[in-house]
Image 1 (cartoon, rainbow, N blue to C red):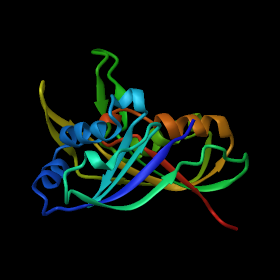
Image 2 (cartoon, rainbow, N blue to C red; image 1 turned 90 degrees about the vertical axis):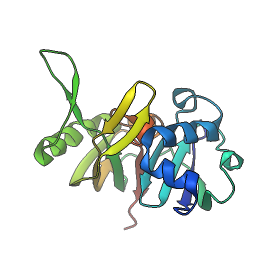
Image 3 (cartoon, rainbow, N blue to C red; image 1 turned 180 degrees about the vertical axis):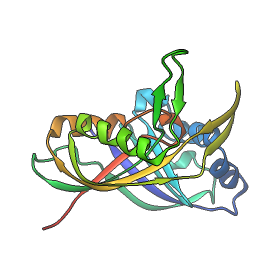
Image 4 (cartoon, rainbow, N blue to C red; image 1 turned 45 degrees about the vertical axis):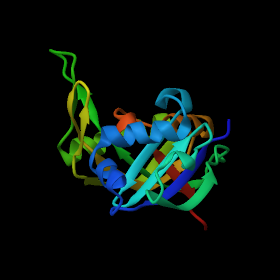
Length: 196
């Protein structure tokens, strides 16, 4: 499977880009247009950090779907999926950590930093990584206007160092993401090898 990423510098003076940057539902629709299909079919993941938009998909990402002046391409690259067991990597993830409320069976967003650290610590081994360092920051809420009502997405930034224990599980996590709210800018795991 070939997975590619594009790194874009958004233009906040462009009226459409400015609206998309403030609305996770609009950005979801915009990124789906860039791959020409649904998020699930394209294994589409994205995250935004200020003016930087990172889009990843298992389909071709078509930048001609963006309005003129919307963004500038910084980089386009393939995502390596063939990691070696024992490799030491720096990883990053913006996620929507949740837990299931036993009584109602509803998913509830976590708001305590320690609970969020426990959440990611339990997910990383399933993603083939043995963490040696985890840093946690709460990000501003993602907000949007969905046809069924207002969206509010809790977002946490996780960064750290890890050892690759299961290359196959890592490849799966890189393609499919981690956690909930993947349509709304959460779940995109990125890794890069630390040079000795």
